[in-house]
Amino acid sequence: MGKSLIYIITHWDLDGLASAALLARSRKNRFYIRLSTITAIQKNLEQIISKERSDRGRSRTLYILDLNPPLGSIECLLNKLSSLIDHGLEIIWIDHHLWRREVIDKIGKLGINLVIDTTKVTAEKILSLYNISDKYSIELAKLARDDDLFLNKYKYTIIWRRILRWFDWKTRYRALNSFVKGRIMPRWALKLYKEIKPLYEEHLKETIKSYKLVSVKNIKIAIVKADPRIHSGEIQYLLEKNGVNADYYIVVYPKALSLRSRKSNVALIAEEFGGGGHYMAAGIPCTSETQDIIINKIIKYFEKQEKIVNTL
Image (cartoon, rainbow, N blue to C red):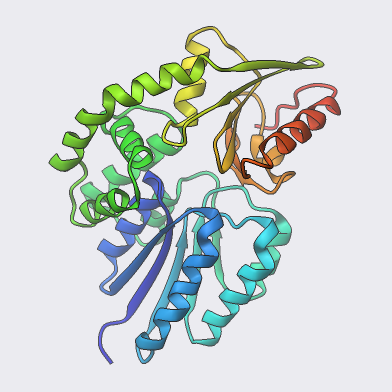
């Protein structure tokens, strides 16, 4: 029969890469890993369904990590998950974002092992679930938490964050491969970062020059358009450092809006418009045609609020 096989679909950020690497290193299995965005979960499931034709006969498990499914595509997603279950796969979904109850119920009815813990990033949850305690794995999970919560305590956090955003999927898979091999900061990554650091910081400084401040009742909203290679947390930080103190920050990317706040649960707001995420950082999928429509809807949403509700 051969070794059992694990499939992994994981987010491409530092927490997603660390989570996949921790699983791959700790399980004595062959593994096949696909990096993903929330909108690409379906496409990656289709690839696994196709790959299943040649992998039958082995024990197979699919892990979906650090991804919360968008409500708008949940029915199509359920169909593909059902197909994989019919093929005999065990599916384990581990995440730390906020999920809608209706999505939890629908996925749970399929018999999927769903583990959602908003108190830990996904890499930390994997450590505890699978009793992983070696020094390297603990350090990798710390790095994932540092990036995901934008704590920035470790020197490698900002390096990896910028590399993963600036470069393409090939570089992200290269980073994943390094993590699986136990290399938390390989030389190739340091070399790449040295090349892009001045460019990244120049783009960041130019980005905040274009911000617009909108006041809705007692709520201040800073809106800024950005290159997708620039992290929204760094944009918020630099705006605040330059005296732009808003209640909410909306960073407009070509295919998504990033919502950030230090005062309120932006994941609840993002859910209203087909997105989701964390308490202080969330996202909404969009296109260039729908950006302004969604922003106007968000402003109208705030117009209905009497005050900023602290839900942290």
